Image (cartoon, rainbow, N blue to C red):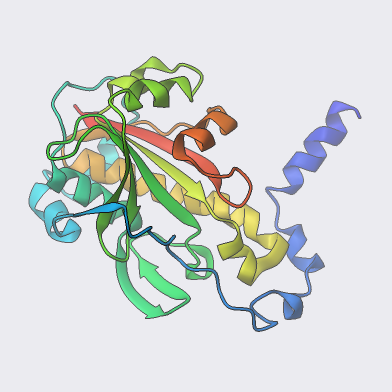
Length: 253
C-alpha cells in the first residue's frame, strides 16, 4: 500500500463520513440494551479516600480570572519539589471530570462536555507527591468524589516515565493524570461513530486540566506519545475493553 492510500485511510477517522453509513435504529441503545455504567465499580476491599469539595477548592485556590488563565496556559515540563495537597488535587479532579448533576442512570452532566453525555473516561492517578496520600496508583470515583487506592508504589513516578518512552520529566511530577477510555459507553449510543468523538472528548478534559492548573499555580503537559501496552499494564487494565488514551503530569511551578 502506498503512503497516499495510508494517509487517506487514517484521515477518514478525522471526518464524519461514517455517520451516513450507520443505521442508528440498530445501535445498542435503540435496541433497548442497558447502558454501560458511567463509573467502574469499586471492589469492597479497596480503601476509599474522601476528597474536599472540588468546586469550593477551585474557587478558593484560583489566583487569577479565567481570561488570564487562558492567556497564560502553557505546557510545563519542569516542576518544583513542592507537593500538591488534597485541595489542589480535588480542584483538578473536579475541573476535569466532576459530576454536576445526575440526570438519569445513563446520563450525567459533568464539568466537561462529552458527546451524548456518555463520558467514556476513567481517571487514574500516579501519585508521587501529594500531602495525605501514599505514593502509588489511585482511581478517581467522580460520582462519589472519592479516590480508590489501588496499590501503593513508591516507584510509581519512575514507572510512569518509563511507560512513556522514558520521558524523564514525568518522574518529577507531583501526580500524573492517566485517562483511560471504555469505548462501550460511547458505542452504546453512537456505534461506529463513537471513536472520533471519544478522541475529541479527551481534548476537552485535558484543556480543563491546563486551565485549572494555571489558575492554582501549577502546570501540566499533555502527553500523547506513550507505550500503549506499558501504560495499560501500569493501570492494570485489559487494553481492549479499557485502554489508556491520554495522560498529563502535574506539578507546582
